[in-house]
Length: 264
Image (cartoon, rainbow, N blue to C red; front, side, top):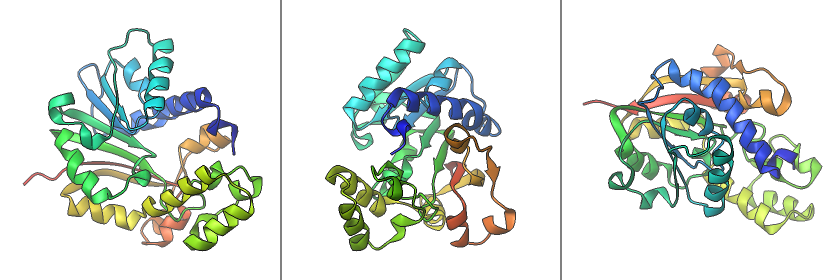
């Protein structure tokens, strides 16, 4: 396990830096972000992704199902931007309605969609929170990329650094983690991600089926996250590889995209 997975303040800072340096400029190529922009982050966790939007004066709301994460988000944000008008909600997004929080110009989901069950249902539901011209930013790791299973959280140094390990069948995957004495909570978490992990092809099919269109889409050989993690500058995927279904999943460590509702 890397220190960043246990040191939550460090993780908060890393999220904030990447969002400010790469995510916001990416979004601004298609959407103006200023004091009048209403921003919702679903799966906001400890709030690092929200901080740069707060600093830009946006009207910010964050929702996360884990109460402990929301409490930390409130603490960390208050320390940096006291008395901000940020709304942070501890709840399942399916229990939140438009009447509760309104509609938004921008919905942010960074490293979240690969953790959600029944992604078809999710995308059908979440569009109710979008303004007519609103957009959703998504950043996610394709399932088949070297660490798409998030197994870098393993305590075992070997398993946490072993690429493609998560692609073993479920029984063998579980057996190996037990053999290396991983905690049950870690094993259960990684098996759940094995159920929810999403490929590029499947993601694109869902987007089309739920009547969204892409306004921007890019695959990365080096995910923008990797600069703060490993000192590697972001590098977009080779255009030829990016055009080959299935193959691109193995060699793209991240996908950034913006989608909006398809107008009839």
